[in-house]
Length: 443
RNA sequence: CGGGGCGUAGCGCAGUCUGGUAGCGCAUCUGGUUUGGGACCAGAGGGUCGCGUGUUCGAAUCACGCCGCCCCGACCA
Image (cartoon, rainbow, N blue to C red; front, side):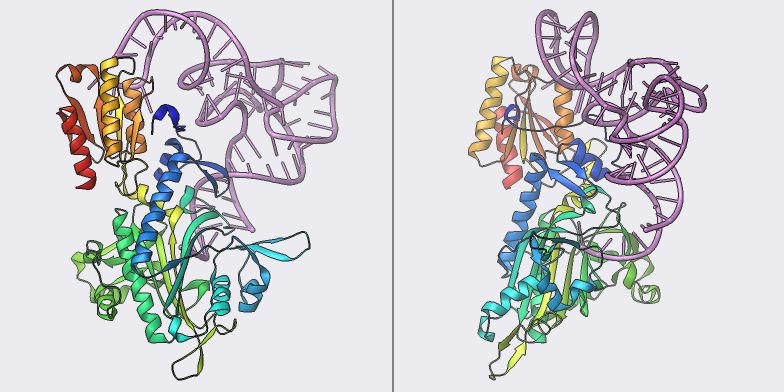
């Protein structure tokens, strides 16, 4: 992408309303524009990150056997009356009516709707286990939206729903998602710690929140520090083995959110040196809730014994749009964002320090084309800005790898290779810098 | 939903107390000089002062009402 052909409205000054670092950087980097309390337009740069996060979620869901569909944002109140939640869900739910005065709502979640899909088509245990998910916009009319996209009213969420013949199978489905989530967040370059959580209005008796530790986190969390650096299951993990031992191993150490915190147990189970109390951002939440929806909504299948049974369900959420903010909270410095390469809006950039110098421009063009040919998602800054402004912008938007080309270096036959995460700034021959970039990305 | 604050050019702000017809920095546009860390000079454009009602000869400024946004607390992916 040539910067002269892109839309990147960066701000030199911080909008006054942005108080936390991720919100400020997202506005300054031209990723989002606020349209109202908790409602945002996703500008091209922010949308790129959003799409990359979505893609990682899709790949990891697929690996764990979940199937993508897409349900609507607007739902009929009828389904919610069936489950009893139309009245139970408070003012958080945006209720609207259509021209015929029918009660509708903008979905805050999709248990009812997916249960309706399920009961329409699935009649036999042979079609189980089944896990259906979608990545769709939700609306929750929060009393007080804040923290930019981390606590918006409109937000993009991956929500998945598992269906199983009995409780044992349902727990295996829960464990599969538990492991899939660890892999998912790990690929995004963040350390998410699963913590025992309150089940809230969704209900159920088994629930974990996936928490990123960050100073600006919304809630207090307590865990064994050994959990933070526990490696994820990994890409060759067998999701179809019995996952109970794996789950038990990963939940043996203490980890709880504020609501579930038991100070006595924490002190008893965790050596003092490993007792970590911190702030956390919730980026995922999984629940097992049995037949809470299948029973009132009459979603049942015939089992091997010929008897009908209500299907056992669980639900699994990932705050996709919230992750943008959370990742930035965990990856930034005073100059801007430091994207993990897996979610960076651009993996690398070529910076032309003298756009009106033929030799410099030719070298930039060669580097740009070279990276494109290698399949690198590369931004080429071919604008007439001054060097300082260009470099500051690249740091602000957090491009992981830069090839900086100017007349001085070029006369010596070198260009500059810089990494955003710090450390590396070296003078290299142009071809070497290109190779080095590709190697860093594709390793 | 309780408490507090703010709304003036795209962004950041001054002007409001003490009423006299709107200003600064950045950004934008034109011309020129510049160009390895957010350039300089000269010129230019851009404002229903959140909305409404009222007071007044006169309202960004005073009064009342409304709307919007932010912050702190109680609640949530």
